[in-house]
Image 1: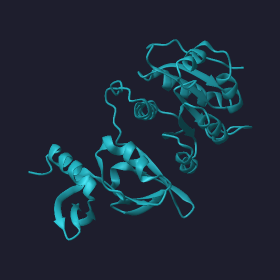
Image 2 (image 1 turned 180 degrees about the vertical axis):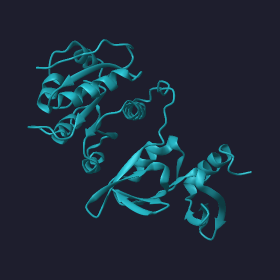
Image 3 (image 1 turned 135 degrees about the horizontal axis):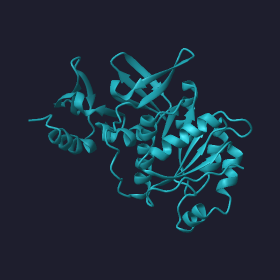
Length: 276
């Protein structure tokens, strides 16, 4: 059994389980995770079965966490395609834990990432793992933990930026990665969401509430139970026949603002100096 724990450089940092059946990929993933200022210990497993055995072992790190009511590890960075038990199947086991670790998928194929969010993953990373991309995934893990526990986040690494987040969408049998920065507004469609960009619209299997949580710090604001809007694109807030409306961009797209979201929207617009 391969069981590796790095020397912790911060006792309050994250405990992460890295899982990949390809040694070069696992070594690169471990290296990037250890280089993150928010990661302390990294436990490595060569497949999903070993990962489950590790979490069920008498490891002192894991035992101490469980005694404190914490998940066995803070996060799992796992390859999707592995022999035997797949990363997808392993994630369902992790999801049954209470509390459960935060899940990030690592994959060599973008089309596999479409299913990642259905399994509750907060992010996915395309191989080969790059330091900047791993740092962003770790930041999303921290955001998820903060939302669940109310803990204050440590500072984001210097030079960090969340503008590179992309959303995978399926188009005619291929997968296209849509940058968040190109999204103008999002409309809820049941348990799905439709992203409206400068080039068209794309349906994704992500609930609007989940996008609201993930994108609130990137300047997206909920204006209605059905709409999430990039606040920097709002050019006007006006009273219409049925209540307040916002005007978006040069093409003057008009979207409704619900009464319950009006005050918060006004405050954010004033705070961002978008209203006089």
